[in-house]
Length: 88
Image 1 (tube, rainbow, N blue to C red):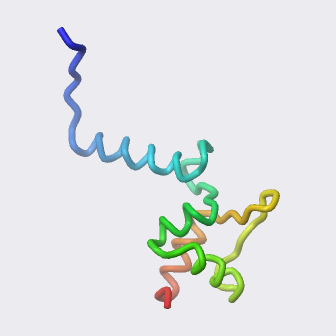
Image 2 (cartoon, rainbow, N blue to C red):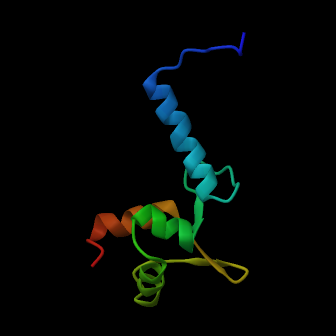
Image 3 (cartoon, rainbow, N blue to C red):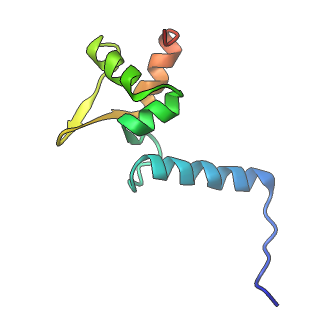
């Protein structure tokens, strides 16, 4: 016997994968509702380069907080930015 098998629905597997990715993006934080994301995670989330994140901050289009020397953003702020206008 190699182990215990537990059948899981595709929906449950997707839900677990989504939560794991969110926690990895947060650097270990457990704030599932609206996680803080650093520049690399924010760029990955928006499918753009890190330079684009810095440009959006400089243009005043993306609100940010500082955590030490790091810029951090709420995922909801990234979602709002994309909903308002395309990232050009």
